[in-house]
Length: 268
Length: 309
Image (cartoon, rainbow over the protein chains, first blue to last red):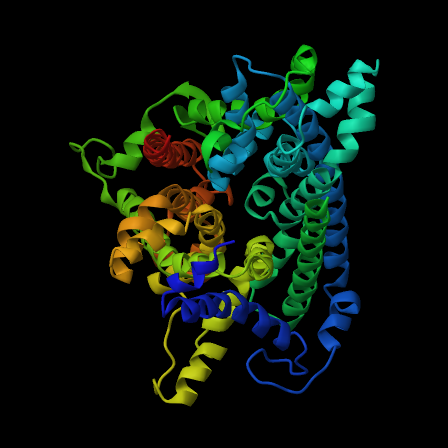
């Protein structure tokens, strides 16, 4: 882009960039390494082993982790799917609906879960479920997750839609496609990269959530983050590091997928 | 967060205007019922009387706010003096969040600048490297930090091995531990918006300044920084707001003596000794603070944009 950009390097900036990446990655790498530690103690290194990974699947806590994982993944899948559908529909109105009076207010409501501190949303939701007498459990977690996933799905979807000119649907409609057909046959395929990114980000956000889940989950049900938090409060054990490393790897795969999708999209 | 992003971007056509209401209905319903209305309900709860085992009695009371700001003695009959305990927790949170924001800016700006001045094909790789920790589970990142900072943890081992210290440093359960946790948690949130702003910056401005013999540090402070200020503001919001209400860093890296707002609120709702109206009041005060900060910064952002056009 700028041929002269190199002229504007500042001497220490490269070093600080490496420092920044070191800070970001070092703790994750250390935990990954120690998850392969053969020792029972988390302090001393006892050689390479997969025993804590085996422990996660067969050890005394395996039943707890298994049900937490089933809850986490099923909630993330349903919440991300529903939130993506709601966000796509909202984006269609916001980006292809012309100007209207409540547009700014609507955008404010969609962004609420991002703007309001998570702990405040958590308190509000807990009070809400309590006030209407809704039993807290799987369903309350799912409803909460659908709600706070909407803005994370909405942002990439609406950004993608803004990058597509309106002439395509217009052409379809001029050829007597109705609105639904113009959306399904023309706009939707072009928006697919944005929709996939939105879905993946919503999925990760749901899978990662601790604070809101911890407030609305009620007793007797755990997701992976709340189960991990509960274990960590009783002391760091190597099996937690193994489960953390697996989640880390999973998040990295999803983010990489999302990144690859957005790159395919750029070459078009 | 440039241009129309603050209002959701511009509409690019009105092909779907007739179906607008139906298309927006699901979003309005879900967010209205599950987020917006509950925040209103929370405001009402903050003016109700507490039930001893959690929950509320539907009787109007100002007690939650009174308890937050004033101390009336054990039986509530002494003349009110200011209650500093809770104000102190808020003050500590504001201070910690501000410091974390400044530290993130200090490391984040050079990083974003460095990435933005790489050739285009390398930039995507750098940005990708910052994006991964951005999306990695915050709980796991905080737990990793706790593992690193422990008294017998890798950091202390390393420092002792190098010979900088002879006794292990206690970082967990101190304000320093919380600060490191906040900084580490939200660092990627600073880099990404800064990068987006610096990438759009027109480097021929720097070139022109250099041709006129401006020294490098002046180019940075007088030309680059003012031009990318919207990105700086966006980054500061994304670090400050979640830091202020954070729960994981103070809970896992601080201790009972390093309470922040998040832990104070959490304590009112979980466990049986909770005080729901007080928790709701503390949440309302936090929300008000955040909205004030957002309003001030959004106004500044709007003024910058007006100046630019």
